[in-house]
Length: 169
Image: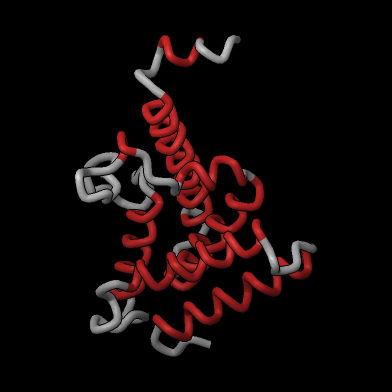
């Protein structure tokens, strides 16, 4: 396939990257859904979301970087990402990783694990923590041995749990 072949299907580079970004977010969401669906425990579901996020970043670094790079075709005039679809889907149906995280946090609140005062903006705190960890593991300086990754992930997940959930360990 030639370099120009893609432009038969996409108007320009930005349109191509926007589609790859959508595809990458869809793949991440699929991984998150698969892991979330393995348990009914809200605390474990929150951990599953974070672990899926970091694992996706490490196993698919190109897609991960493209997923969260803003492209004109995926952003509104103010630079905010446009949603992939309706926001009323459950975590087992959602195509958006951020939406899945929101549903898992809602479940934690419904189960009495997340105080209602901590719920607003909880996605931002949790997402920032795992995204920062994923970026530091990909681009340095954190150790990338299996033991180093597991230690870093457990530290960040424990921090999220203690910071957000009632009775965090």
